Amino acid sequence: MCGIVGYIGKRPAVPVLVEGLKKLEYRGYDSSGIAVLEEGGIRIAKSVGKLAVLEEKLASRTFKSTVGIGHTRWATHGRPSDINAHPHMDCHGDFAVVHNGIIENYLELKQWLIGEGHLFRSETDTEVLAHLVEHFYEGDLEEAVRKTLSRVSGSYATVVLSYKHPDMLVAARKDSPMIVGIGEGEYFIASDIPAVLKYTRNTFIMEDGEMVTVSEDGVKFCDFSGKCREKIIFEVTWDSVAAEKGGYEHFMLKEIFEQPKALRDTLAGRLGNDNVVLQEVDLSPSEVASFQKVAIVACGTAYHAGLIGRSLIERWAKIPVEVDIASEFRYRSPLIDDKTLVVVISQSGETADTLAALRESKKNGARVIAITNVVGSSVAREAHDVIHTWAGPEIAVASTKAYTTQIEGMILLALYLTQAKGTMPQEWITEIISELKKLPEKAEEILKQAYRIEEISKLFTEVYSTFFIGRGLDWGVAQEGSLKLKEISYIHAEAYAAGELKHGTLALITEETPVIALATQRDLYEKTLSNVIEVKARDAKVIGFTFEGNSDFDRSVDEVFYLPETVNELAPILTVIPLQLLSYYVSVARGNDVDKPRNLAKSVTVE
Ligand code: AGP
Image: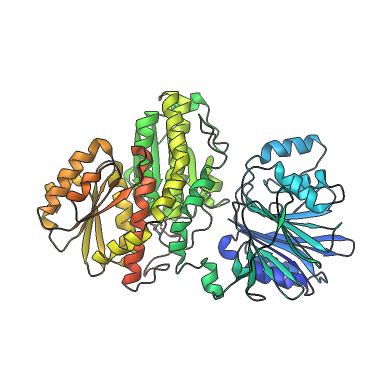
């Protein structure tokens, strides 16, 4: 997720662009840049690091331009660096582009353009857009952009600036947000409303498949075939803080609702019909065959994603797996050597305990793969291979979209290892891939029922202690659900293997301790049901989560939330969503600081 801005009008463009980028830093902040039109050509300034670094660079330069574009980056392809920062230009400096999204076919386009004589400077996917516009330009900028987009697959919100057309900006969006702000004789283009609120509340919300041209003649919206249309002005009533949350009350709720897109983005370019393609992992079948075990190491929510990954790798790739909390890993004298594949999982990529485990593993000769959400993070730089989650910045301390995309990362890795070892039949892999592609839509179905979870959350507002129970993968998800509730509602919550309750903890179950029971694993459903009955016999209220097909479940519990069906192994990505919502609504009802809960930090960079 990145932030893009464009401006054309009568004000000096640079301050407008920088102000807009500041309001979009929540969308990405590892590097930034601007490009403006001056006599003699396009002037670009860009730098790695926070926006303040770019501001310092700009302070020593003067600009007269009133037309420009800007970008604040959350790196996907190409590590954070001055060269990889946007805007990107064509060979001759006639065109500059900024882009938010993922160009899935950028490698083949780049190879073709290089073959056509184009010279590339960066490692990014975005740069192909500038060279495509150059390739297709024959005097009409809009037409060149239209032809460019017809060759691109993936997601984009992009703005194009051209020295040959100093009086206009051309922009387009597909699967990435973009708005247009309307001032008095001036126009603003941005990823999101906060960037323009200082200047105007009159905006157009662009639709997928729409292009826009802004110039002194006004604003023109057309589809990619060139058919133009009128749009209705959307007057913004939010203040800028609310606008950064996209109208949601908290970043956590926004990030919960961003999960369908985060899930789609993380799969983008990595799934064929019958196989997984992980360009970032370079393991030969013989190297995979040489691994005698996998060691997964992480903290908190990332650790819980690792618990799911263990089951998938053992079931599918038939490799023994250990999962460790990173702060314990180094002190138990783990048996790690060059026959071990170590997988470290970290949203921030900066968690000290996880980083220390990575370094220890490398010292002992292990191959290390990282699953992380931050390109260029310490974990990403020090691992041998990296599977990036494309969830975009996660601002709320309580991790939500990072967890579900980390599980996707584990699924992709498990399938990659399975393909290399040939341990599962092809038709089975094809079925799993087909089901995986349906998850974002099923996540949307669950999110549409958020109101039901808000109702259920009322059962917890005055509660002091609660239990999450489940078997197999449901137990893994129960551990994540209990962490979510603990860390933002401050209720003591404990996750328990449902079959283990009777060995002691059942003594704590009373009518005062509501129990959340997860029962999605079909082979364990009957046994989990009997554990629910055990708990009900101790007068506890039970809130059950199971697949739609288990329609009898409501007879055994006090409240039931039915989940869309999927295969057992993919269920955790869906089951956790109502649990995230539950913790959110309970925390709000208890008047807590949902995004910044007490005692906690987003990234724990100390051991
Ligand atoms: C999750 O809600 C917590 N904020 C915390 O457990 C977090 O998952 C943990 O600190 C690991 O962070 P990382 O993924 O950035 O390494």
